[in-house]
Length: 255
Image (cartoon, rainbow, N blue to C red; front, side, top):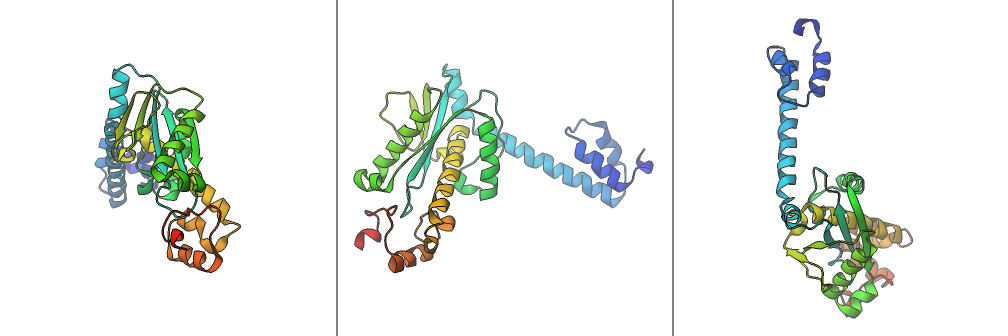
């Protein structure tokens, strides 16, 4: 069979293989042609990469598995984005994933490219029982302080869920709502539910800032998401303070 197949045809066959038990692998390994051996090496690297992603996903499911073992059935991951910027709301998301899910590649949203986040948002939506997204405005941040405003945004996100959660996994925060919950430091890199919430919130907020920035291009919100870049600081100096700027954040409060 090997002699009858071209290298191109063998590459096509290799790309169809999903298991190391596939008998075609042993057959193709006997083919000494360089192109075939390169294709096999590439296939092996892809398998190793996927295995690493599966292992990471299993490691990040530990908190959810522990809660399920305790009898909880609607475990909700919660995270926020936008605590540090000079402009825009702080946005929180709450996500309850399906019982059977495998969204390989989940991680802290800050560690992912914009393209990868967009891909994962679609996967999360396909694999979620419920998603809630909400925010606290710049004015609320100024009135309450960023820590308390983050709590407000998180609770609002929970309230947006179509399914009531019975347990919360929260990134480095505790909410006074009476629900069983666990505060997880760096939770967006350690829990699949919190990572999913982190990605949902990040994509939502980035889009919010980009849309707002269309009317104020000098501030570069589509690129900086409200953080204090040189472009943003120069626009504040030249163009002034906008309604979405946080008046209690330096250097704005000094102006």
